[in-house]
Amino acid sequence: MADEQNDPLFPNPQVVITQPSAGQVMTSGYFSIKGYDGSIWVNAYKVLSDNTLELLGGSVTPGGYWEVPVFFTDGSYTICVGLESNMSERVTFSVRVAFTVPRITLPRDEEIDISQPFTVGGTATPGFRVRIMTQGGWHDFGLSEPAARDGSWSKTLDIRNLPDTITIQAAHDAHGQWSEARTFRLRASKPIIQFPENGDITDVKGRISGAGGVSGAIVEVLKDFEHSFKIGEGDVPV
Picture 1 (tube, helix red, strand yellow):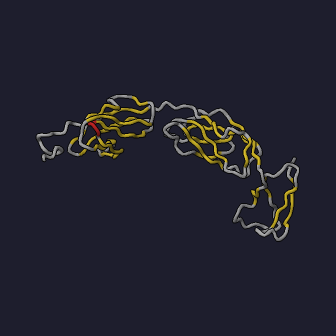
Picture 2 (cartoon, helix red, strand yellow; picture 1 turned 180 degrees about the vertical axis):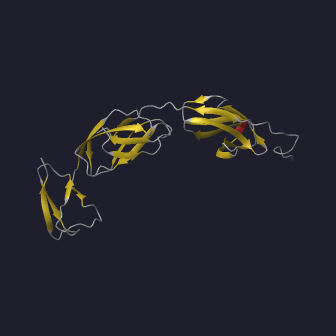
Picture 3 (cartoon, one colour; picture 1 turned 90 degrees about the vertical axis):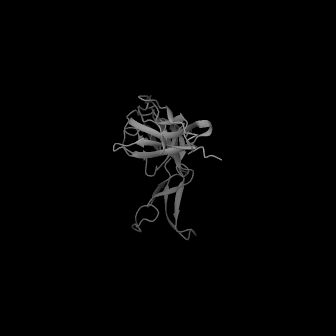
């Protein structure tokens, strides 16, 4: 049986890119390079400044049509698709991401139990990281992972040694449109030790401090897991 891939009687039609088109401006960093024809598999490449090719991904070609999901940041790019023996024409396009202002939608409850992980989340521009800070910028919680294709993002915040009430905002890194502020009240259902931290070397007569517990109660600090004797005690503010 003839090999249709290489037999000159069954030539492969040249690979054609239908999306993006030449000169097109993509307003989302996430999209798919689409087209038709080629062999049973095609690779998509970004053409670099030195004319070498950087592999973006591949796709099977059921029915002659193919699709390669990609992600680009703002800029101008040239791509081509195919295999060594059958490459498409090169297409140059640009990406100008339409940024949306991030939103903090999670958690819905404003009372936060600090004995549990504090994870915030919301919506943002797909593919881009979100920076979380207290309002006014006095504490930076750092960057989230890139927002997913549906725009969702989340980040677990380190809230040790922070005031009982914090107000936070989110913005895309290097894009200064800040979200509406969310205020959370930090509480603990049980006492937790915040100082010294686990593994610290400290003065045996030094202070021990923490947070949580029932308002107005007395917190006892006990030695080791067997609670062999009481080290000290402190009042929980009302």
